[in-house]
Length: 297
Image 1 (cartoon, rainbow, N blue to C red):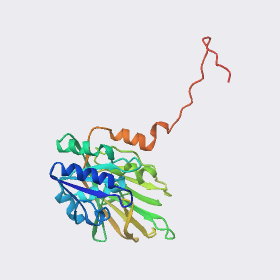
Image 2: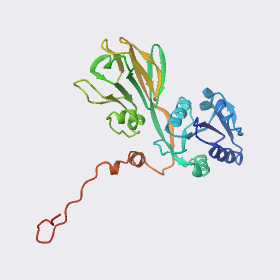
Image 3: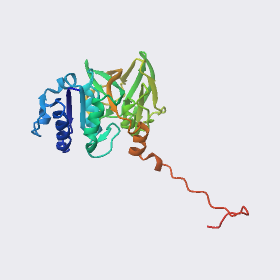
Image 4: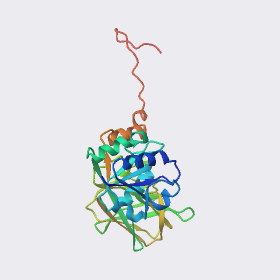
């Protein structure tokens, strides 16, 4: 491994992690690259490069932050060969693999090829002739004061189902634990290649989510009865659509690759993050004496 690219959280203190990476690289003659506007504030020894060049010039990209930073790092890695290692700064996320104290050992393991990668699905959305990419989700969301989101889902060019809702979320398996989950969608393993369509606060008679193949041609038609909608890409507003507009969706399997060192599984991370074991407490059965009669409470 000759070049390590770093992506920083915009607010959290990442100086300790950056120092660990720079020191590890210096001991092995490797170069550290960083997005120029991010690393200037640290004054570190990383070489500043434009964000668009980071993925193509790195052998590994290290994301320092939470899941939002990791999604940004995956977008920068999209189309390149560099896998992405998530380093947790603060709250436990779904995508981070190691904490800061474990970073030097993790880099050494990757340098020795003692790791695996998880391919992650992306979805490209065509809006007004422009293409935006999400690794979590693309959502069409009602704008306050402009009415509900009335949307028809097209599969293979033909209308399949219509929703009236506060939003319609199209999520990847990576995004199944984000907006889609909060709207009632299922948890889906990242190894599954599928897209989830989940209505948020549906007002229509049909209020169920869907799981669709990445081989299906998908689009969202904004119906005449809809209000103006915001198009959110990984939680950020990318633009707006009016009734009559169409958002065309193109899933791309293996658009980015996430480093795994075998320390935890997806299910263990989901269990901890979502507190699944404590989600349905069951009262213990009352003790029974040997004669079979219940013990009075």
